[in-house]
Image 1 (cartoon, rainbow, N blue to C red):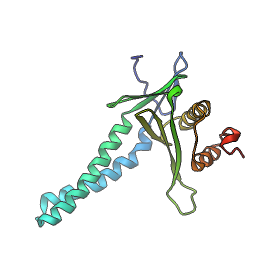
Image 2 (cartoon, rainbow, N blue to C red):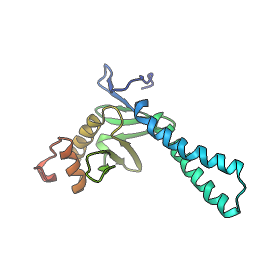
Image 3 (tube, rainbow, N blue to C red):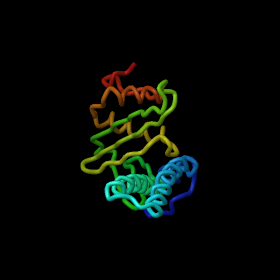
Length: 182
């Protein structure tokens, strides 16, 4: 299905019932700024100040970490997801497809940015055979993606961790009784 990928901040639905999801620019700005805040000073210092070999390696290592983070951000921002009744396709530099009928792994984790756990993000990891796909809650329509993945996991009778089950509950999804329904 080679059709143009729509530009949007919320998921869009096609006539065939597929939905498109991508990371809005506003959600990615912070990651771009963090990458630049680490990379630019490290490179500027390396370019203007002589260091010993050890100092150059350490500062170069920091520059490399921020460069990799920036590249990862660009790749994530440039990837769109197409969700259909039969599969989830990541379309970007690396294309991956997870057929719902082959789903064999699902993990939903919450990462808090505060001690009181009132702020943070969720990370959904899906797998089918050797294909793995990870996405976070900043993507447009994250709840819709999680709902469909949970339905596929239930249909496949996957064993989910207690953490994943608790996070499904936190999103207001009621997993099947055997998953510890509350």
